[in-house]
Length: 414
Image (cartoon, rainbow, N blue to C red; front, side, top):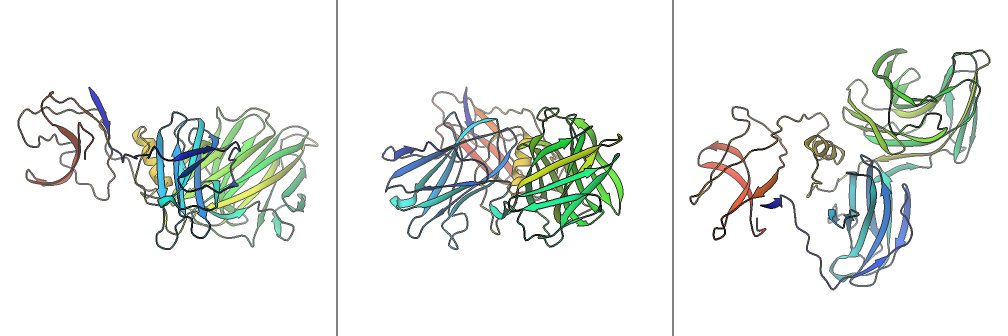
């Protein structure tokens, strides 16, 4: 049996020269390359299952870059060239959902043998760096608790609090109010006498209205909606394999996309939720002491980074084949489909056999009309030796003679 996947095939010229870069491409960092005509430069990085990353390549004048994302098995997963032509010749892969933990390679080359220098940037979330390393001394972080001590320097924000089961939050009221974004910060708990909880707010609209991601010292996390001081628990305290009990330094992240909210710990996804209560706001943070006498907590927040979607997102021309839910989530991240969509039909397996010329069809989802759909399938073809055969998907079927058909034959033609 020959297995053929519905995807775009990428043909690589054997004349291209590959240069292997030694430097690892870390999140929220950039590297500079200067390939000669026909040279491909490679930059490697590690990523975890479910992490959402973006790669953007900006070339100097005269250099037209293209980018490929390659798995550790050598498979080309995604490609892009001129994500918003003719406004820019930059290449971008936005909000890619990493399919498995491992080492990946970003390949950069010049289109049509152009040469020159470029800057390759790896971000988490989206591809537009709205705010990177966002703690600066000129900001005005306001607290909701007079007992919360605030120390602000360029690069970090320190909070400390003393009291029995006390909490305190800070927010930069002059910060940008955003609806769709990815926000991340690094937390280090520097002092604790009886236990601690650290918080990150999302879409905060006022002092007591926001979404709240919380991490505790006993390795649990929680997510809730706070409106005018009243709490609605979205996910109560629960453990996660990525969270290490007692770990005092880690990254917290929130991806907001329409009505979808996704939470991250050190890049790994904690949970995905849909809620339409708050549509936009700022990012804040806080700490909480344990319910014990003389309880105290001190924490330092660093590396605040916020990314937003590109005004003209790269077109999605290729999917990383996974289970249906993961592919749908990936297309939501890439803004190819709205986050409010649903997985309407999932068929584990179907087959059709035909021995005469023409198209034989098997109808799935009969009796239901879909609009604005995305369809994908893993197709296997078992043709007779002397017969050319094809297999694929048909859609928009009006009747037995009027429909759209997308198919491959056993030679790979489509």
